[in-house]
Amino acid sequence: HYDVAVVGGGLTGSSAALALAKKGARVALLEAETIGNAASGRNGGMCNNGFAQNYGIMAGKYGTTAANALY
Image (tube, rainbow, N blue to C red; front, side, top):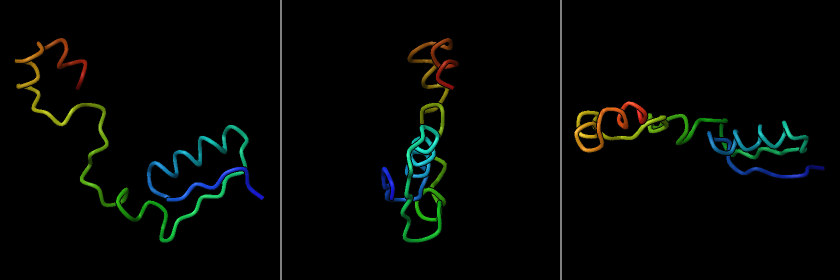
């Protein structure tokens, strides 16, 4: 028996399952294929800590202090 079922073993589903398990939940992670194999395993690197904008444009528009904080 499980407390929660997480459907999808990509980045989001695996992260959710891990966070729930760390809190003590009994988690079933359901994935039709290999964990992390679909979109999460083949993405174009869209997971980032900044914006998908040119640094020079951001600095010109918002200033270097703001641009540095975003990148």
